[in-house]
Length: 225
Image 1: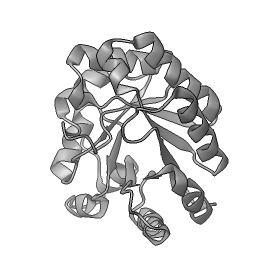
Image 2: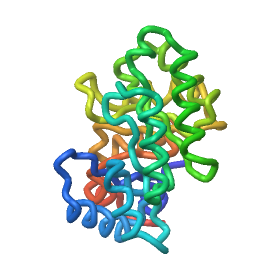
Image 3: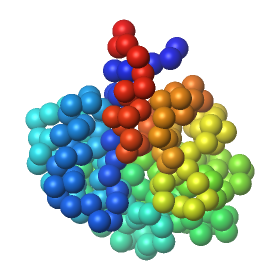
Image 4: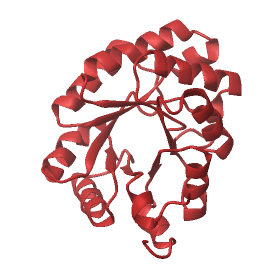
């Protein structure tokens, strides 16, 4: 069933991850999130406290990114970043995997790194694991999703939106959902700028959508019944 405007809004992480984003930009994002009725805002880890303070008492959750966007960080650094973001008020974490490790087939190390972030985040926090699917083969995407599942993540996510290889595709979402759903959610992110594309991701199995063009996308959906 195609979601209504309100239902789609409640699947969206309204996102601002530009490195030049100011505090005022983040507060504007939060104001927009409340007006649009989205599920969460997604911000850089150093903005998690600001967003959490502004949204305190409101239904919109705060997601912070970890090891972003390259994933080429030590596991203990990612774990520390995760812990600090949670202490600042993050409800969710979007963690980039060690992409080089994934390409090399070092799946025990990839799994261990995710598990370290999972432990550092604590039990109340939802962990989404970004696999940068456009860079991986289908077989590697499956292995990355299985690593996320085995390490205790709650979601797998297609992309950072920063890699030149591209963002979310319907094929990637279908493959990821077939691998881990319904035990894990699937977040499609990267290059989703129209309602048609967002709805295609939902039809393919996405249960969350990351986007920055949220108002534009929701305005394209007629009616709210």
